[in-house]
Image 1 (tube, one colour):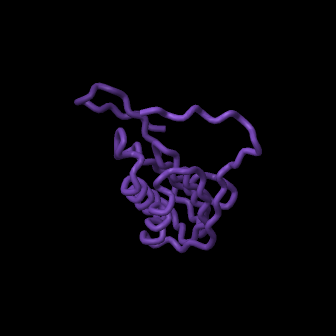
Image 2: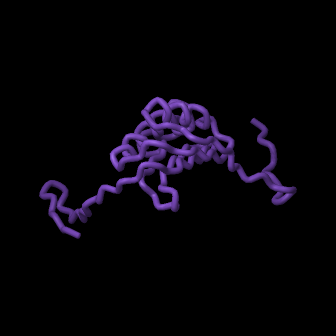
Length: 135
């Protein structure tokens, strides 16, 4: 780990070199909540190769849009392809609006999608849901 000093900000930055992994196949985990979309691309063992979320580039209510999910998926796919990922299986979790657009963006970025799976946890009458909003 190298320590470098930035003279403008007067802070100490800790830099670590990213090692390039050569992973031809991976798993794209898409967590689409009502407020954000989180995309993590891992290798087949579950080790993270690349990740991104809509909150990295968008703030407030724009995080929950399909456009934000599309941009996030493209950025995450580019980072994963730098590590050699070519094929992914997609696992989607959650009820958010960025589900379909993020899958389309992963395919448009050049990743070959081998499998799509919905892994949203469904309660068998578990916790009581929150009360309805009255706006």
